Image (cartoon, rainbow, N blue to C red; front, side, top):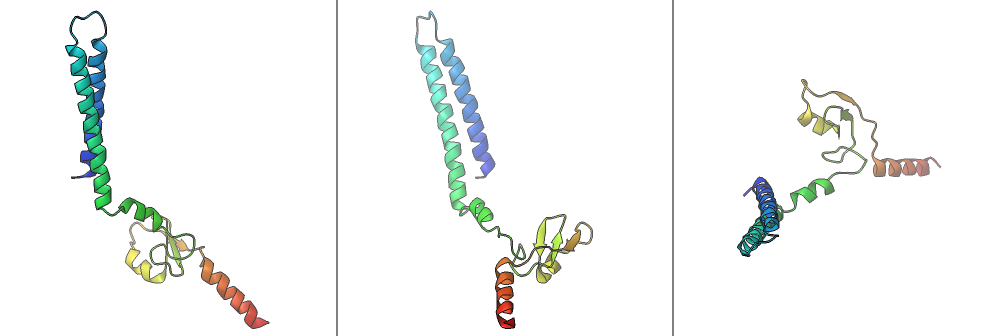
Length: 139
């Protein structure tokens, strides 16, 4: 099943629960029978059960995919080098907003859509370590 199926089930459940609320509210008044109230409560419970099933399906789909939504945000590198492999960034693609090293540039290059500028990003950890080692070597 897809995530869209879960979305539709949640939406249909919410609509059914709303219809059940309307039916239950219409039973309030001077009526002799309580059948309308019982029908309204049944429709509300079925709607909420359908919505809960949609949430459950979406959770199982996320669990089966291995938490792909979490891995996207956690795999994002901090400021440093190439956004794809982590080496020293050479250029910045203005269209796709990615910093690229020389190797990844060959894979990413598209003459029709990409606009490249020299990367202003430096290797944060490597650059500071190299500077301190060079300063120690000079003294």
